[in-house]
Length: 163
Image (cartoon, rainbow, N blue to C red; front, top):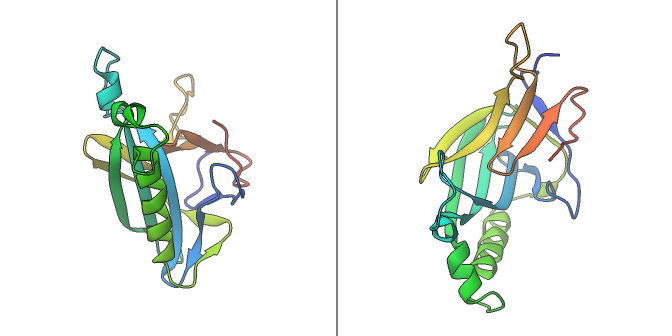
């Protein structure tokens, strides 16, 4: 089944889609996620390459991507130096996420429906990208993947995801 033009994403409190919903300007999808640069090959420097990002994507009411605020809190190597410190990479990311969410007027956590989109920031691919299985003979895209979070959406297109 082909990917629909607008893809529903279900709000799940306390899970990976807990910080999505609507606000006065449209819809939003926010997360804190670790990511490697596109094309990264595992090596000795992986701890310096694995970065923690705070992501806020904004969409209009019809699900068209409007803008993204993507901020790097630091690396895995930095986090391991002060894992429980109030200035750790994770603590900085959580504080930034709280700030960006607080800046959304009339925020309501709920299901959203958005169009696929893609952008690259600091060598990392972000977006909701349509993909197809290699064995798919017709070449139609049959699922959408949220990057870099790696949440997969597919038929029956009810907003639920696979990891």
